[in-house]
Amino acid sequence: MEDSTEVTAPKKKSLPNTFVKIILPLLLGIAIVYYLVSKIDPARLWDILKNANWGVLLFSLIFGLSGNLIRGYRWELFIRPLGYAPRLSSLIYAILGGYAVNFVLPRAGEIWKCGIVAKEEKIPFAKLFGAMILDRISDMITVVALCLATFFINMRFFISQLEQNKSALDLIVMIIQSPVLHIALVAAIITAYIVFKYFKENVIVRKIKSFFSNMVNDMRAIRRMKAKGRLLLCTIGIWGSYFLYFYITFYAFSFTAGLGITAGLIAFALSSLSMGVPSNGGLGPWQIAVIAALMLYNVNELNATAFATGVFAIQSLWVILCGLFGIAALALRKQK
Image 1 (spheres, one colour):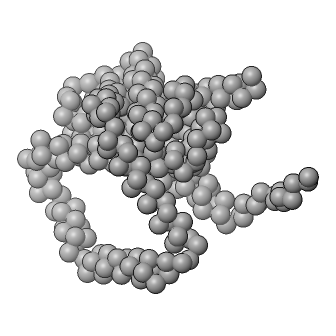
Image 2: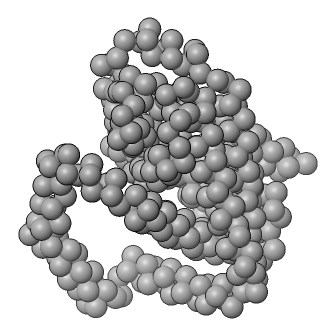
Image 3: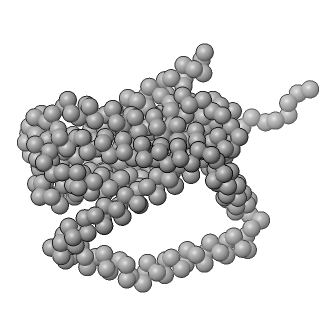
């Protein structure tokens, strides 16, 4: 009996869609970096980077990889309560590969890693995506807690900085008090209510409701898991590794070596927030955040730009190399 299922050709990506998703973020990131570097003499910039302690920079890379290895184990902890037992190696390879994919297409790495694990481990994509969302929610809570802790620990420092920069303080107050912001929030809530109340039979609305309903059920299963302690330890391990991955690089440059752990914490918190901006691996927003943090501690613009440029370059190359290794490992396993 012949299979009557029609095989449809994959849809071609439209040029506007490709531009918005791939080209635009890349161009914006390059434009930001160009703007930052264009004001500085390249010879002086290279002289600072050449004299950096590259042994320290290379040593810091170990902690970036260790954080991602722990992330693979934490993702497994989220998946197991849902009734599936994926191989840890598949999850780690997919996470490494996903970060490399993000350099090509921002945020696409999250979808890619769920898709590749779904094929490798025969787990429904929706279950993996839901577990990944919960994994990201854990990260968001951690980053918010980190930023709040950084603010309260260094409250006097931030207040003094705001007092010295009245324009920045006025801008923050203006945004908070802006009627446009309040109207936009109310409009968004009303729109969401109308859509889900009166268009509940719409295919897209039903899929969204089904997705969130399944996620709620998955969260209940995860809440009943016995490995909550391991989940917490993994989160601490991930972000502790990421902090060391960043902070150790301070000791590669003479002008940051003496700033101390408080400065490192502030710069790390701001750089972590910047990763929420869709860009190719953080290109652009990450440098702005780090340069701004270092200049708070009276590091001049040239040195701050050299630090951000050098650290971002070597860490990005490391992420891409690890990602290519993960993709290759998955491909070789599939062939075998």
